[in-house]
Image 1 (cartoon, helix red, strand yellow):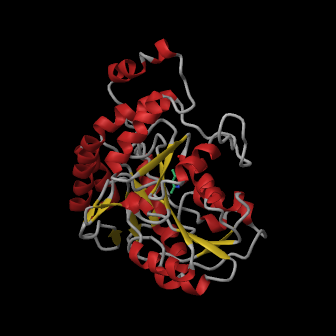
Image 2: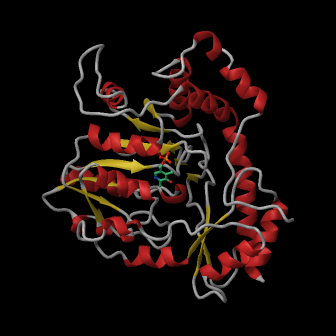
Length: 364
Ligand SMILES: *Cc1c(COP(=O)(O)O)cnc(C)c1O
Protein backbone atom coordinates (compact mmCIF):
# COMPACT_ATOMS: atom_id res chain seq x y z
CA UNK A 1 0.00 0.00 0.00
CA UNK A 2 2.28 2.76 -1.22
CA UNK A 3 -0.54 5.06 -2.36
CA UNK A 4 -1.06 8.26 -0.46
CA UNK A 5 -4.03 8.28 1.86
CA UNK A 6 -5.23 11.81 2.39
CA UNK A 7 -7.41 12.81 5.32
CA UNK A 8 -10.31 13.21 2.94
CA UNK A 9 -11.22 12.69 -0.70
CA UNK A 10 -13.98 14.61 -2.44
CA UNK A 11 -17.13 12.74 -3.41
CA UNK A 12 -17.91 12.89 -7.11
CA UNK A 13 -20.85 11.47 -9.08
CA UNK A 14 -20.20 9.17 -12.06
CA UNK A 15 -18.78 11.33 -14.90
CA UNK A 16 -21.70 10.61 -17.26
CA UNK A 17 -24.24 11.74 -14.68
CA UNK A 18 -22.65 15.14 -14.38
CA UNK A 19 -22.32 15.51 -18.18
CA UNK A 20 -26.01 14.66 -18.55
CA UNK A 21 -26.92 17.19 -15.84
CA UNK A 22 -25.03 20.07 -17.45
CA UNK A 23 -26.05 19.29 -21.07
CA UNK A 24 -29.00 21.68 -21.18
CA UNK A 25 -26.85 24.58 -19.96
CA UNK A 26 -25.51 24.60 -23.55
CA UNK A 27 -29.06 25.18 -24.80
CA UNK A 28 -30.11 27.87 -22.30
CA UNK A 29 -26.73 29.62 -21.91
CA UNK A 30 -27.93 30.45 -18.38
CA UNK A 31 -24.79 30.09 -16.28
CA UNK A 32 -25.59 31.84 -13.00
CA UNK A 33 -27.96 34.28 -11.18
CA UNK A 34 -30.58 31.99 -9.59
CA UNK A 35 -30.84 29.65 -12.60
CA UNK A 36 -33.05 26.58 -12.99
CA UNK A 37 -30.55 24.22 -11.37
CA UNK A 38 -29.89 26.60 -8.50
CA UNK A 39 -33.62 26.80 -7.74
CA UNK A 40 -34.06 23.04 -8.15
CA UNK A 41 -31.23 22.40 -5.68
CA UNK A 42 -32.75 24.80 -3.12
CA UNK A 43 -36.05 22.85 -3.29
CA UNK A 44 -34.36 19.46 -3.06
CA UNK A 45 -32.29 20.56 -0.08
CA UNK A 46 -35.38 21.89 1.70
CA UNK A 47 -36.78 18.36 1.39
CA UNK A 48 -33.56 16.61 2.33
CA UNK A 49 -32.78 18.81 5.34
CA UNK A 50 -36.47 19.07 6.33
CA UNK A 51 -36.43 22.88 6.60
CA UNK A 52 -38.85 25.50 5.25
CA UNK A 53 -36.11 27.66 3.67
CA UNK A 54 -32.72 27.08 2.05
CA UNK A 55 -30.72 29.88 0.44
CA UNK A 56 -27.66 28.91 -1.60
CA UNK A 57 -24.32 30.73 -1.72
CA UNK A 58 -21.05 30.35 -3.58
CA UNK A 59 -19.39 29.14 -0.37
CA UNK A 60 -20.16 28.60 3.29
CA UNK A 61 -17.98 31.42 4.55
CA UNK A 62 -19.76 34.15 2.61
CA UNK A 63 -23.08 32.61 3.68
CA UNK A 64 -21.98 33.07 7.31
CA UNK A 65 -20.87 36.67 6.75
CA UNK A 66 -24.18 37.44 5.06
CA UNK A 67 -26.16 35.80 7.90
CA UNK A 68 -24.34 38.13 10.32
CA UNK A 69 -25.27 41.13 8.17
CA UNK A 70 -28.85 40.09 7.52
CA UNK A 71 -29.52 39.59 11.24
CA UNK A 72 -27.89 42.98 11.90
CA UNK A 73 -25.56 41.78 14.64
CA UNK A 74 -23.56 44.38 16.54
CA UNK A 75 -20.88 44.55 19.26
CA UNK A 76 -19.89 41.21 20.76
CA UNK A 77 -20.61 37.67 19.67
CA UNK A 78 -20.10 34.63 21.89
CA UNK A 79 -18.42 31.78 20.02
CA UNK A 80 -15.74 29.10 20.44
CA UNK A 81 -12.10 29.06 19.26
CA UNK A 82 -12.11 25.29 18.54
CA UNK A 83 -13.28 25.65 14.95
CA UNK A 84 -12.12 26.28 11.41
CA UNK A 85 -10.73 29.77 10.68
CA UNK A 86 -13.94 30.75 8.89
CA UNK A 87 -16.17 31.09 11.99
CA UNK A 88 -13.98 33.63 13.78
CA UNK A 89 -12.88 35.38 10.59
CA UNK A 90 -16.52 36.00 9.61
CA UNK A 91 -17.23 37.60 12.99
CA UNK A 92 -14.13 39.82 12.90
CA UNK A 93 -14.49 40.76 9.21
CA UNK A 94 -18.01 41.98 9.93
CA UNK A 95 -16.62 44.40 12.53
CA UNK A 96 -17.73 42.41 15.57
CA UNK A 97 -15.72 41.26 18.59
CA UNK A 98 -15.57 37.50 19.20
CA UNK A 99 -15.88 36.54 22.86
CA UNK A 100 -14.44 33.06 23.28
CA UNK A 101 -16.32 30.52 25.36
CA UNK A 102 -14.74 27.20 26.31
CA UNK A 103 -15.87 23.82 24.93
CA UNK A 104 -17.09 20.56 26.46
CA UNK A 105 -14.34 17.95 26.98
CA UNK A 106 -16.44 15.15 25.42
CA UNK A 107 -18.12 16.56 22.30
CA UNK A 108 -16.04 19.76 21.77
CA UNK A 109 -19.11 21.97 21.33
CA UNK A 110 -19.72 25.18 23.29
CA UNK A 111 -19.82 24.79 27.09
CA UNK A 112 -23.29 26.19 27.74
CA UNK A 113 -22.70 26.62 31.51
CA UNK A 114 -20.05 29.23 30.66
CA UNK A 115 -22.10 31.33 28.22
CA UNK A 116 -24.07 33.51 30.63
CA UNK A 117 -21.07 34.94 32.44
CA UNK A 118 -19.68 36.15 29.09
CA UNK A 119 -22.82 38.14 28.20
CA UNK A 120 -22.47 41.94 28.42
CA UNK A 121 -24.62 44.86 27.28
CA UNK A 122 -22.83 44.67 23.94
CA UNK A 123 -23.61 41.01 23.23
CA UNK A 124 -25.91 40.57 20.22
CA UNK A 125 -25.56 36.90 19.36
CA UNK A 126 -24.17 33.42 19.96
CA UNK A 127 -22.42 31.65 17.07
CA UNK A 128 -21.82 28.05 18.21
CA UNK A 129 -20.31 25.31 16.03
CA UNK A 130 -21.63 21.76 15.59
CA UNK A 131 -18.02 20.52 15.67
CA UNK A 132 -17.39 17.29 13.67
CA UNK A 133 -21.19 17.05 13.32
CA UNK A 134 -21.67 16.78 17.13
CA UNK A 135 -24.81 18.76 17.90
CA UNK A 136 -24.48 21.59 20.45
CA UNK A 137 -26.77 21.72 23.50
CA UNK A 138 -29.42 23.46 21.40
CA UNK A 139 -32.11 23.51 24.12
CA UNK A 140 -29.90 25.31 26.59
CA UNK A 141 -28.61 27.73 23.93
CA UNK A 142 -32.20 28.56 22.99
CA UNK A 143 -33.10 29.19 26.63
CA UNK A 144 -30.18 31.59 27.08
CA UNK A 145 -30.85 33.35 23.77
CA UNK A 146 -34.50 33.88 24.69
CA UNK A 147 -33.65 35.13 28.15
CA UNK A 148 -31.15 37.75 26.93
CA UNK A 149 -32.76 38.44 23.56
CA UNK A 150 -29.79 37.22 21.52
CA UNK A 151 -29.71 35.87 17.98
CA UNK A 152 -28.26 32.41 17.30
CA UNK A 153 -26.41 31.45 14.12
CA UNK A 154 -25.12 27.88 14.06
CA UNK A 155 -21.99 27.05 12.13
CA UNK A 156 -23.35 23.73 10.85
CA UNK A 157 -20.63 23.29 8.22
CA UNK A 158 -19.89 19.79 9.57
CA UNK A 159 -23.46 18.73 10.24
CA UNK A 160 -25.10 18.10 6.87
CA UNK A 161 -27.99 15.66 7.27
CA UNK A 162 -27.50 15.13 11.02
CA UNK A 163 -30.69 14.67 13.04
CA UNK A 164 -31.42 14.55 16.78
CA UNK A 165 -34.49 12.57 17.85
CA UNK A 166 -35.61 12.85 14.22
CA UNK A 167 -35.32 16.65 14.16
CA UNK A 168 -33.02 18.07 11.48
CA UNK A 169 -30.02 20.01 12.78
CA UNK A 170 -30.93 22.67 10.20
CA UNK A 171 -33.96 23.75 12.23
CA UNK A 172 -32.18 25.13 15.29
CA UNK A 173 -31.36 28.79 15.95
CA UNK A 174 -32.33 31.77 13.81
CA UNK A 175 -30.08 30.60 10.99
CA UNK A 176 -27.75 27.65 10.32
CA UNK A 177 -24.85 27.77 7.89
CA UNK A 178 -23.82 24.71 5.88
CA UNK A 179 -20.67 24.38 3.80
CA UNK A 180 -20.71 22.42 0.54
CA UNK A 181 -16.95 22.69 0.07
CA UNK A 182 -15.24 19.84 -1.81
CA UNK A 183 -14.05 18.29 1.47
CA UNK A 184 -17.45 18.14 3.15
CA UNK A 185 -19.88 15.18 3.30
CA UNK A 186 -22.03 16.83 0.60
CA UNK A 187 -20.32 19.11 -1.92
CA UNK A 188 -21.12 21.49 -4.77
CA UNK A 189 -17.35 21.87 -5.48
CA UNK A 190 -17.39 25.15 -3.54
CA UNK A 191 -20.71 26.16 -2.06
CA UNK A 192 -22.81 26.75 0.99
CA UNK A 193 -26.28 27.46 2.28
CA UNK A 194 -28.25 29.13 5.01
CA UNK A 195 -31.33 27.43 6.47
CA UNK A 196 -33.96 29.30 8.49
CA UNK A 197 -37.59 29.28 9.56
CA UNK A 198 -38.42 32.97 8.99
CA UNK A 199 -39.42 33.15 5.29
CA UNK A 200 -39.05 36.94 5.30
CA UNK A 201 -35.28 36.40 5.27
CA UNK A 202 -35.42 34.94 1.74
CA UNK A 203 -35.74 38.28 0.02
CA UNK A 204 -33.06 39.95 2.14
CA UNK A 205 -30.59 37.11 1.57
CA UNK A 206 -31.23 37.06 -2.18
CA UNK A 207 -30.43 40.74 -2.23
CA UNK A 208 -27.31 40.41 -0.05
CA UNK A 209 -25.82 37.75 -2.30
CA UNK A 210 -26.41 39.96 -5.34
CA UNK A 211 -24.87 43.40 -4.63
CA UNK A 212 -27.79 44.52 -2.47
CA UNK A 213 -30.10 44.78 -5.47
CA UNK A 214 -33.71 44.29 -4.41
CA UNK A 215 -35.85 44.83 -7.45
CA UNK A 216 -34.63 45.69 -10.94
CA UNK A 217 -33.15 49.05 -10.03
CA UNK A 218 -33.32 49.57 -6.26
CA UNK A 219 -30.17 48.84 -4.29
CA UNK A 220 -31.11 48.66 -0.66
CA UNK A 221 -28.06 47.11 1.04
CA UNK A 222 -24.31 47.63 0.86
CA UNK A 223 -23.42 44.15 -0.33
CA UNK A 224 -21.17 42.10 -2.56
CA UNK A 225 -21.55 38.98 -4.65
CA UNK A 226 -21.99 35.47 -3.28
CA UNK A 227 -24.18 33.67 -5.80
CA UNK A 228 -23.95 29.95 -6.55
CA UNK A 229 -23.56 29.22 -10.27
CA UNK A 230 -25.28 26.54 -12.35
CA UNK A 231 -22.25 24.23 -12.56
CA UNK A 232 -21.97 24.18 -8.78
CA UNK A 233 -25.72 23.54 -8.49
CA UNK A 234 -25.49 20.74 -11.09
CA UNK A 235 -22.76 19.06 -9.01
CA UNK A 236 -25.04 19.38 -6.00
CA UNK A 237 -28.02 17.82 -7.80
CA UNK A 238 -25.83 14.83 -8.79
CA UNK A 239 -24.11 14.42 -5.41
CA UNK A 240 -27.38 14.65 -3.51
CA UNK A 241 -28.60 11.48 -5.26
CA UNK A 242 -25.66 9.57 -3.79
CA UNK A 243 -25.20 11.22 -0.42
CA UNK A 244 -27.15 8.62 1.58
CA UNK A 245 -25.07 5.80 0.10
CA UNK A 246 -21.91 7.77 0.84
CA UNK A 247 -22.96 8.28 4.46
CA UNK A 248 -23.67 4.53 4.75
CA UNK A 249 -20.15 3.79 3.51
CA UNK A 250 -18.69 6.33 5.95
CA UNK A 251 -20.61 4.63 8.75
CA UNK A 252 -18.94 1.25 8.04
CA UNK A 253 -15.50 2.86 8.11
CA UNK A 254 -16.34 4.81 11.26
CA UNK A 255 -17.55 1.69 13.07
CA UNK A 256 -14.43 -0.22 12.05
CA UNK A 257 -12.27 2.56 13.53
CA UNK A 258 -14.29 2.33 16.74
CA UNK A 259 -13.89 -1.47 16.94
CA UNK A 260 -10.14 -1.19 16.50
CA UNK A 261 -9.45 1.80 18.73
CA UNK A 262 -12.12 1.58 21.39
CA UNK A 263 -10.35 -0.09 24.26
CA UNK A 264 -6.94 1.48 24.01
CA UNK A 265 -5.62 3.17 27.10
CA UNK A 266 -4.73 6.77 26.39
CA UNK A 267 -6.87 7.14 23.25
CA UNK A 268 -10.22 8.87 23.58
CA UNK A 269 -12.88 8.64 20.88
CA UNK A 270 -16.00 10.73 20.49
CA UNK A 271 -18.97 8.49 19.87
CA UNK A 272 -22.35 9.88 18.68
CA UNK A 273 -24.80 10.32 21.56
CA UNK A 274 -28.12 8.48 21.82
CA UNK A 275 -30.79 9.82 19.47
CA UNK A 276 -28.23 11.28 17.04
CA UNK A 277 -28.22 10.19 13.40
CA UNK A 278 -24.64 11.06 12.48
CA UNK A 279 -23.19 11.86 9.06
CA UNK A 280 -19.81 10.34 10.05
CA UNK A 281 -18.01 13.40 8.69
CA UNK A 282 -14.79 13.09 10.72
CA UNK A 283 -12.95 10.66 12.96
CA UNK A 284 -11.19 12.73 15.63
CA UNK A 285 -9.14 10.96 18.31
CA UNK A 286 -7.58 12.53 21.40
CA UNK A 287 -4.28 11.27 22.82
CA UNK A 288 -4.20 11.50 26.62
CA UNK A 289 -1.12 10.00 28.27
CA UNK A 290 -0.79 7.57 25.38
CA UNK A 291 2.66 6.05 24.80
CA UNK A 292 3.14 8.51 21.91
CA UNK A 293 1.92 12.06 21.69
CA UNK A 294 -0.23 13.43 18.89
CA UNK A 295 2.65 14.84 16.87
CA UNK A 296 4.58 11.59 17.06
CA UNK A 297 1.60 9.61 15.76
CA UNK A 298 1.07 12.15 12.99
CA UNK A 299 4.68 11.69 11.93
CA UNK A 300 4.57 7.89 12.06
CA UNK A 301 1.50 7.96 9.83
CA UNK A 302 2.99 10.38 7.35
CA UNK A 303 6.12 8.20 7.10
CA UNK A 304 3.73 5.57 5.73
CA UNK A 305 2.11 8.04 3.31
CA UNK A 306 -0.97 8.45 5.47
CA UNK A 307 -2.04 12.00 6.10
CA UNK A 308 -4.07 12.67 9.23
CA UNK A 309 -4.72 16.28 10.25
CA UNK A 310 -4.37 18.42 13.37
CA UNK A 311 -7.94 19.57 13.08
CA UNK A 312 -8.42 21.94 14.94
CA UNK A 313 -5.01 23.25 15.86
CA UNK A 314 -4.18 25.99 16.64
CA UNK A 315 -7.24 27.57 18.22
CA UNK A 316 -8.56 30.51 16.21
CA UNK A 317 -7.93 32.71 19.27
CA UNK A 318 -4.20 32.08 18.78
CA UNK A 319 -4.07 33.31 15.17
CA UNK A 320 -1.36 35.92 14.72
CA UNK A 321 -3.77 38.20 12.84
CA UNK A 322 -5.77 38.76 16.04
CA UNK A 323 -2.88 39.59 18.34
CA UNK A 324 -3.60 42.88 20.10
CA UNK A 325 -6.92 43.30 18.27
CA UNK A 326 -9.14 42.45 21.21
CA UNK A 327 -9.07 40.81 24.60
CA UNK A 328 -8.79 37.05 24.19
CA UNK A 329 -10.50 34.91 26.81
CA UNK A 330 -8.82 31.80 28.20
CA UNK A 331 -10.35 28.49 27.15
CA UNK A 332 -8.39 25.73 28.93
CA UNK A 333 -10.43 22.78 27.66
CA UNK A 334 -10.20 23.98 24.07
CA UNK A 335 -6.41 24.40 24.41
CA UNK A 336 -6.09 20.94 25.93
CA UNK A 337 -8.03 19.28 23.10
CA UNK A 338 -6.31 21.30 20.34
CA UNK A 339 -2.93 20.05 21.62
CA UNK A 340 -3.99 16.40 21.58
CA UNK A 341 -6.50 15.87 18.78
CA UNK A 342 -5.83 14.19 15.46
CA UNK A 343 -8.40 13.68 12.72
CA UNK A 344 -7.90 10.37 10.91
CA UNK A 345 -8.59 9.77 7.22
CA UNK A 346 -12.29 9.22 6.56
CA UNK A 347 -14.08 9.29 3.21
CA UNK A 348 -16.58 7.04 1.49
CA UNK A 349 -14.07 5.12 -0.63
CA UNK A 350 -11.53 4.44 2.11
CA UNK A 351 -11.20 0.65 2.34
CA UNK A 352 -11.52 -1.30 5.58
CA UNK A 353 -8.01 -2.70 4.95
CA UNK A 354 -6.70 0.84 4.90
CA UNK A 355 -8.49 1.54 8.20
CA UNK A 356 -6.85 -1.56 9.70
CA UNK A 357 -3.44 -0.46 8.47
CA UNK A 358 -3.90 3.02 9.99
CA UNK A 359 -4.94 1.57 13.36
CA UNK A 360 -2.02 -0.88 13.33
CA UNK A 361 0.45 1.99 12.89
CA UNK A 362 -1.18 3.94 15.73
CA UNK A 363 -1.02 0.91 18.07
CA UNK A 364 2.47 -0.28 17.12
C1 LIG B 1 -15.67 24.33 5.90
C2 LIG B 1 -16.03 25.18 7.05
C3 LIG B 1 -16.47 26.51 6.92
C4 LIG B 1 -16.37 27.30 5.65
O1 LIG B 1 -16.99 26.81 4.56
P1 LIG B 1 -16.50 27.10 3.06
O2 LIG B 1 -17.64 26.54 2.25
O3 LIG B 1 -15.21 26.40 2.84
O4 LIG B 1 -16.40 28.59 2.89
C5 LIG B 1 -16.91 27.17 8.05
N1 LIG B 1 -16.89 26.59 9.26
C6 LIG B 1 -16.45 25.34 9.44
C7 LIG B 1 -16.48 24.74 10.81
C8 LIG B 1 -15.98 24.60 8.36
O5 LIG B 1 -15.50 23.36 8.55
